[in-house]
Image (cartoon, rainbow, N blue to C red; front, side):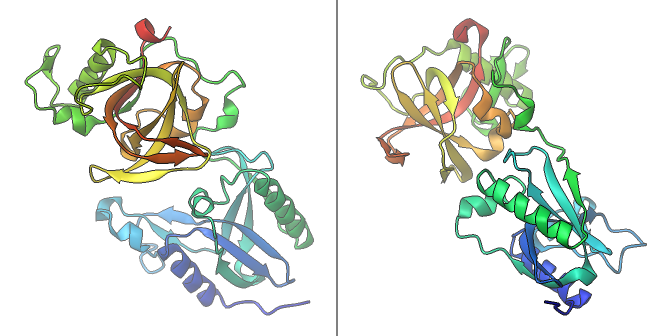
Length: 320
């Protein structure tokens, strides 16, 4: 079966519409009738005199200041990327350069699962990673397309051994800087006020060090809004759980103590450690924050309280 090529202008217009819908996962139908699926990875660049007439700025890019605005330039080929058969997150993947004159159609991949849409084909897990990789490799061979190694400039989980990550010195994992900067107090930490970002880090470390560790959830009394500390290990739920608190996007992690587990709500923009490494941390951590009476169901287990985290960290004198 031989299909007609889609004009380059129509391909570019379709790609622009897909990107403007904040989607990067596409399905390509080749002239042979075979198809490829992958994440669309175009060339990002800043506007210059040479590319002024061909550069295109997606809607999301237009929200940035002009000096920091990057656009897309569509050249002879463009790249699709898909995960390796290992199914790792932010690890090595594969890519295929697809010439425009081999494309019969291009469509946005209609994800039904929002988690898969957010993760994308670059980081999709197994068994789908293996299935997609094998199909794309076979299709590429049949259509004389080269499959290349794609190395993402990110921290790959596959770089960490089975032993995971263990700390031997104080380490802040998470800090709600706005909370510490806006504390209604005249406390100063060392020679500087905690009104600065450096001071906020120092105050967070002080709170983690000085607060009394809570040993149980059953006997918590007094003002629930009073910050408390818990000692436990960090775990990520099998499915991402998101919400909004204090006007910011948040997601849920789990603090597992010796006696109980406690959902912990953290702000996405307040991480002080790479997210892709969080579920590999094996050290005990101190979780500091306020208890909220929020009902939540995680993997079939019901909770009626959530810790709204202000700081999370490893402390030598408490965690070893």
